[in-house]
Image (cartoon, rainbow, N blue to C red; front, side):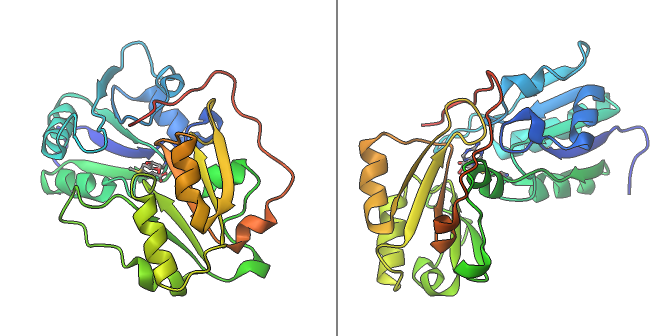
Length: 261
Ligand SMILES: C[S@@+](CC[C@H](N)C(=O)[O-])C[C@H]1O[C@@H](n2cnc3c(N)ncnc32)[C@H](O)[C@@H]1O
């Protein structure tokens, strides 16, 4: 049910950072919208696409402490949709992958606000791809798992069964995994994953500041700590890393992304 007096909220995926990875639809909506709410991982350069009259709202969160609570974001979305016709809720990567997009969409639908989802390019695929690393390869298995390494803060989320995952998936791509990396690695090895499985950590992928470390599962935690890797980073584990092609994508000029500690 939609109350026609209300505006419509577009839940838009911004991609992993490089503005050229925006979809054409996302680009159009960002430049046309009357109001836009955005998260911490949205580069400033994307916000420059909005029209001068667009109202911008930062609703970003930081690890461990929510700068704006999810309840507040939900109720702000409703209030803003009651005032503006075209509202963009811009989220990093894809809005339905580890982004609470479905929770926000359901809340709006329950309040009678029309919602449309605009998928985005997820960091877990694009960030390795910018380093020439495929997340699957025919010669390196037939499966890949996207998993969050962020546990313990939101107790409502079920615990990841890392030991079972060790044997169940040929490739593993971990979002928000840096903070718990030591524990994750120990669990994967205890679950039977070869300690010398190729592993890569890529920080701030597709934007200025991008850096990466290729190592083995048993070394990666110490090495990333020593080199002070930080969020946002993608961790990828699996033999597909061996098929990295000698072609890295060029980074956009002057697009940076906030660092989150
Ligand atoms: C809350 S999740 C959101 C994921 C997003 N919905 C997506 O589809 O990419 C945020 C995490 O995505 C990963 N991430 C997002 N953008 C990234 C980037 N440019 N470089 C490396 N990791 C990134 C990091 O693991 C970060 O902590």
